[in-house]
Length: 405
Image (cartoon, rainbow, N blue to C red; front, side):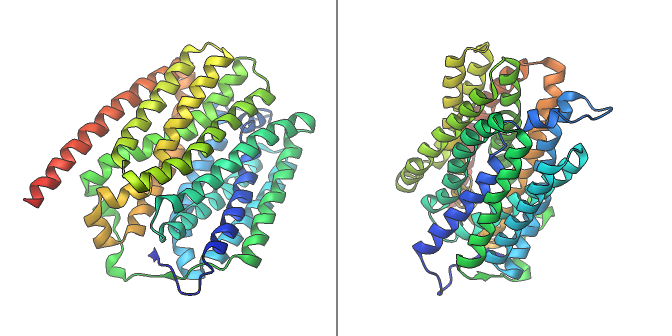
């Protein structure tokens, strides 16, 4: 399946409506982001380690988004993008209401899985729709919507949780998901979705036996998501609490991360369209993420060093996020031509979701095993990953040149 621009599009107005709806939906999911591990720790759960109790909602999030991604892809082809997007946002709103009102940890996890499924569906459908327009700057609409929602959500969400309560803040966030659903149902009139022939569907067997795809997924796609979900969204907020930093300051630091991300994404995307530095961006992103984590480890709770480390980390994440989709057609032109770019993108989105499961799970287990040293060890590993990417791109270029002779 692939998304092809139709003739009945309203052009820029469609993009503005979609951007507003995406912002509202992601605002709903990010409103409790800065304090959710702490929120999860308040439930009384027998026979469950406290660190795992805090990590499990993020693990469930990644797993549910992983499962939902291919189904969102298929449903968009069957029902149309506006229907799928609107219904996903509506389900998320209802699940958020139940989650905020529940006192049961397992019901909270179930609701969390529904919201994550909606998130995965909206992310893949939005990506494919925007990718059909063919520019990194258009894909940046999705990225800036996520970043802007994260800025506002972390800033206001953390403050709201201190003024009222964490449960009340979650209930309030359901309003944004509901507004997103209404906006999509009433105003969003997107391009047409077309289906490609069955012979073009990429098989799992081919993907798993394509060494180039697997190496790139291992060196770029998975680490990006593991750092985001395992460290930025889970471990760093937990460690900030251990440093006796208040929820308000924690929310502001998370807001700062997403603010830097948001400010960088659009200009970097424009530069990427102009100068096409996709491979350099992938390598630099790993180096920046590594340096950010290493500095965070050596900060020892110093708020100034923590702020600088988060700035460096956000820069690395921005450099990587802008190339996640456009780099695929550059590195895998033959595969995209044969099987469809949308199918290859969907596969790498699935790898991202796997990374979202591995990230918090690995971070939680390693935190229990080696303590805060997990941050330092991950930073060193990312430096090795950047070297691996450099070697991969160099050898891959030589291989391509040998075929061209």
